Image 1 (spheres, rainbow, N blue to C red):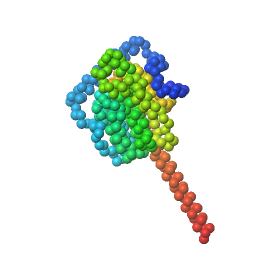
Image 2 (cartoon, rainbow, N blue to C red):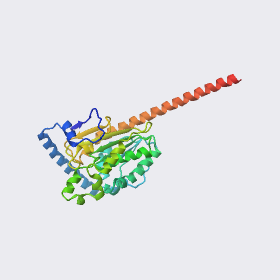
Image 3 (cartoon, one colour):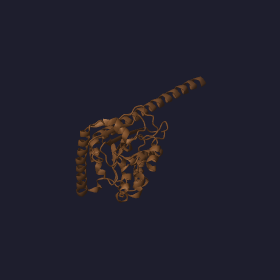
Image 4 (tube, rainbow, N blue to C red):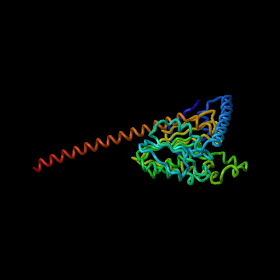
Length: 327
């Protein structure tokens, strides 16, 4: 699987969005022949995905995944929560490969149907999801949460992260998105110019999906707000593909909030087929991050416990000295 890592050094830009031209100029070194080949391969992979999706929806029970407003029972020994959010008009089955790769039985998995399939405002879509995630965070404040989303699901994941900051400030959160529209997409303007937009997406969706929309800028601004010292840590990871014709702008899928963010671009995959292509790496990065955060939390607890024991010992010693002096 050809991939290209994209560290951008000396990051100082206030705007977290780089242009599609900047990403391609600095990182796409393929020949014209290779680009044509990758585009053709992408078409076949997208067709295979669509065939699989249609077959799945026709012959597989839709009750495998929880509804957006369904109550969830969390594990008693939970060590973390993995949240998987599908895209517009999507289905949770897109995460089947990811879920099958999670072998840690102490991790909770939440892959719900998004309200109205995402054909609604962002606020309406994330409200029921946030209730479930918030319930987990409040019951398990020391357990990390990973929010993974594809396309519109990535936009929801980033918005949910900012909400967790206020509701569960001590919780560690990782956001990992695939082919997402964090800054909207030029595709909406293209469809409007053709007079087809109202036939393709709902008005509120078109408004929020538009390139540089008010809602997109609002979410990105909240993410960039400083996190108070002592609150949970944040980790960001973004995947995209050169052949994504639906997003149409790499910059929309690859925001950069700090030098610690991870970015990766694939070639030869489309907007949908990229999901399974990054599954192994995305799951490994997520599980490793959760184990690391749990290890750090455990170490901090041991240090606090040792400090408390030393304090109690010192207090006992001072009390003994005081008693001797008084006697």
